[in-house]
Length: 252
Ligand SMILES: Nc1ncnc2c1ncn2[C@@H]1O[C@H](COP(=O)(O)OP(=O)(O)OP(=O)(O)O)[C@@H](O)[C@H]1O
Image (tube, rainbow, N blue to C red; front, top):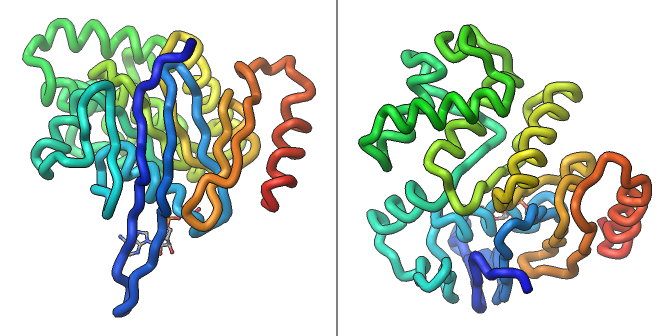
């Protein structure tokens, strides 16, 4: 039996655009499960990022309820949401936004120090995570301008995981990377997920989506369908076909 991590009830989000209301998310009832690698797909403008922002407390819904564990997060103030995000969520975006004037290690530690005062423990965890993403000690001392895009994204993942978040949210994490470095980042996400990290990722890239075990398809602000792909394995030859067939059915 899967454990529910996060739940939405009648989640709606509307924006006022040029004097009219645009209803981007419409009454979404969704449950996200612990340990899953959930992927949100859909055409451009379907509302994928808007959904990710609402789920992660980066934005508030217009209507509806979001519950994390036993805690209703949709009622929290901006300050309450900031604390929720810091303590429970990790974020990886297409743009990495490392702080230029700090070393790679200090970038990660500064995120950790927002939650914990135990610098020694943070350094230990940072080192473990850097080892897991294959960022050596020399690179840890470099500044963001001195590392490659792929290294920067892997540092971004370490930063996102330093506070041991219950959910890692990723929005097109390979969007700005070339094929090889994008693959390294996907392998890294897969590895952490195999170790139990729950991941929710938005993408319109099939190669990225294949890493998920659960694929949700969003269309015009509603979840049109979902596909259970099972756990990722690079040996799973039928995976690509199963996903293609699902996406075709969804009208992708
Ligand atoms: N802050 C905002 N203010 C006004 N409209 C917004 C805002 N954020 C999103 N929208 C609108 O909501 C719709 C869905 O946007 P969203 O970014 O969620 O789509 P998406 O599925 O992630 O698209 P893409 O794949 O192109 O990134 C778009 O029409 C967008 O213009």
